Length: 127
Image (tube, rainbow, N blue to C red; front, side):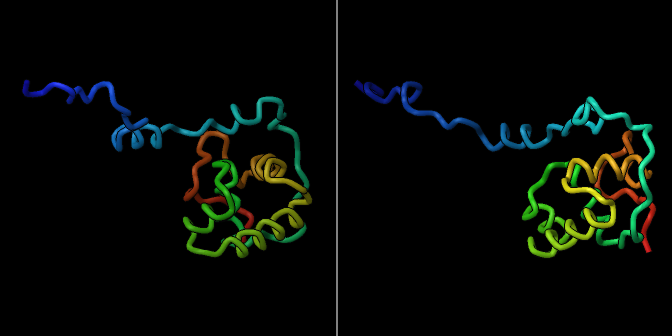
């Protein structure tokens, strides 16, 4: 008989289709308030030791996205090592030791916004 043994519904199926993957990529990351539920955003922060450069601000704006250094570098068209150097300088200038602390201090200083925490927005404290 024609068609016998060709039941393709029983065979392995791909986990996702390209359309499914595009839907998964479009999920918005949590807001800063959702990501940092125990932070008092109104608490004052010390001014940076030195002004942040425009490139340091570019890197800083990607920190809430939780992208890796490689991904941040790819989006900014700089190397992973350059991202690491900018992070080191950001941490020193803001007197912090982690990405999360840098984000919190940047919000308190007005460099990042709780309502518009997407990369590409303009901020202050640069030279």
